[in-house]
Length: 233
Image (cartoon, rainbow, N blue to C red; front, side, top):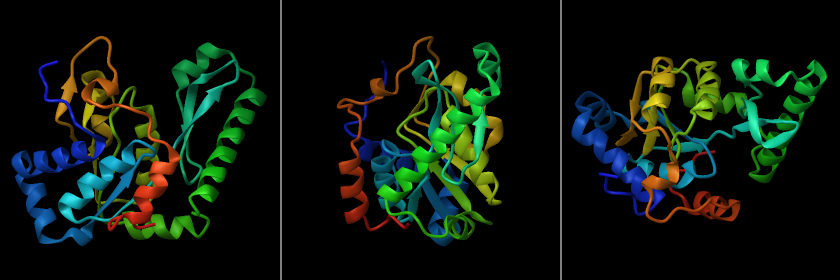
């Protein structure tokens, strides 16, 4: 890999910010002039430390969007769709057509996913008026959507669908690594994809862009947001 791998997710966020400073002159100027017209949303868990590094670099506020896959009943490691924090559902129709699930199986899987999101919201003490917060943070603003990398991009597509419901001015995807095929899949859905490491490869793994890769535990997320100067629930 001809790429200087990230030491950590936090550093990846810093390098995303540096890329904007170096190569996105108009966007960087806007960020310098008025940070209040921007807001960041991270996809947990891995997107949280990336958002910390990114938000610190520009002194921006961020929150996170919980997105969960709708699990295939006979293969719960895989999913045929995603549900977002506000209950928005995005189904992978080509995949679903091949699964031959009954309507009841589909509805049960979606409902189970919504219950999982409800439990996560309770865990992170996000039980207030979520729509009011989304409107305040998104409507008429430039929104950065941050994760530690894209794989298929389906989770991010679901999050994009949700954010669009609240009428942002512009949407920027900021991710440290992604395959070319996924960038092409989602680039028409947003205003800009900012990614220092786009790989045109047959086999792709987000972990390959990092020197020290691990699954971020919820305990680390709680510690990060507890001590953050930028997390704005």
